[in-house]
Image (tube, rainbow, N blue to C red; front, side):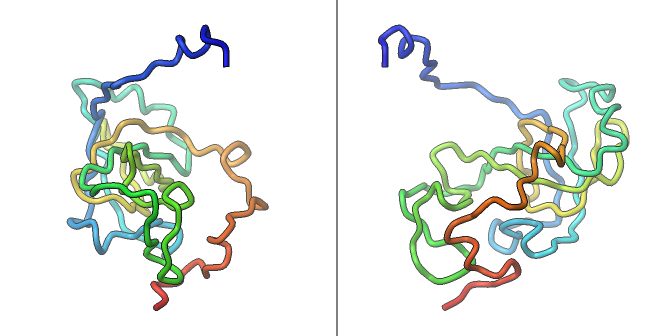
Length: 168
């Protein structure tokens, strides 16, 4: 790679600040769904957005959007390792980036939830897989034609039934 392109790479550290927090029924990391859609989570939560940073008008055009992406900081994550043992499927280690382990070099979370309603700066959602107090970094609309690739292969994950629990 040319030196001129390497010079343009920002190396960080980067500064992020929450724009809101999750108010969720899940108080502990263990017991919260690993993927809300994988276990048909019906849990409701409120995304309490920081009105001092983000005015309610920033959410106006979300009305009519059925699902949203939540980008979060997984603040109760542990130390990361290159190999992890996923909570579903056979008890074998997998490479970190082939899993959705919350223990990552940068513990960013990505959750797709159903948007129920908007009240001021509060977004009411269903299908949450985040614990209470999780910092929210961003919210984006889920756009089916751009975000869904139903024929994509998921490698080793395709071998595990969608609703499977841990297999010994």
